[in-house]
Image (tube, rainbow, N blue to C red; front, side, top):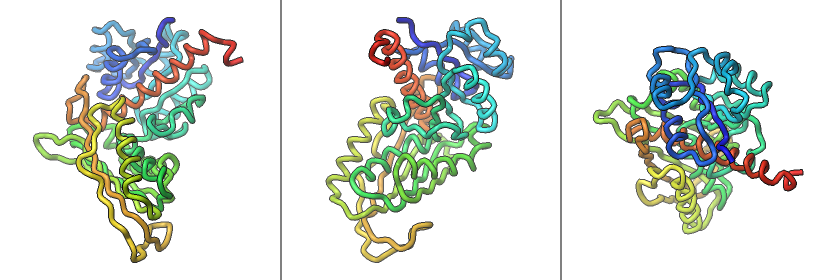
Length: 315
């Protein structure tokens, strides 16, 4: 059967990288439209050169396009503020949405952790780049022992932080913190982002610290290694920077919002190198977002195609 047609709203760096991923690696999805608001956008020009239908008239232009009726999934790579309006229009038209902004209208989705749990939802939120990189590690620890507190620090090159990222830093920290709790299953989560101005630019690096109930460190490390391999299946540049570190906390420490706790402190150090499909390899923070979004779309599309081929199975 023909691939499921998708559209991308947002012709900036993230949208352009995502488009190239769809064109190069899409198995069950194919480009139906690239949408922007600036007729002089480099992303729209590139899309047109690659044979992708374009519009510079935003969501209204997308809905008016002759091929819109064939589009089943729309990626939103704009901003948290714009997404609310885009989603309202698309939901009324029965189009599924994958949200790459911190708007968090739909459930938080990290493919290696909970994609199948939310595959029937009409709006899937990709959390943030820091969330995509670190929440799998929190979830891995949580699979072995209850996590009282998880704190993540995401360090990205300032060159890979465009206007949208900079404008949404508050949303980044709030959205990531909530997702650490709802997806990573930590009782309390905290997120910090650092824009690193170093030259030459450094690749994305993340630190994850979890305070959990006491547990077998071998089991915890095995769960972390297994989760890292799951993420690497769609983000090859995702890797542990060094061995996992453990420390037994026997004297009670105060956990923000939780109270005094003892337990096992697990420290995980990650780096994410981008695939350089369009963005530089140091922009792993953007690559992990577009890679996660594509995996979600592929899963949704393959499920739709499978149901179309075998309607009796879903009756």
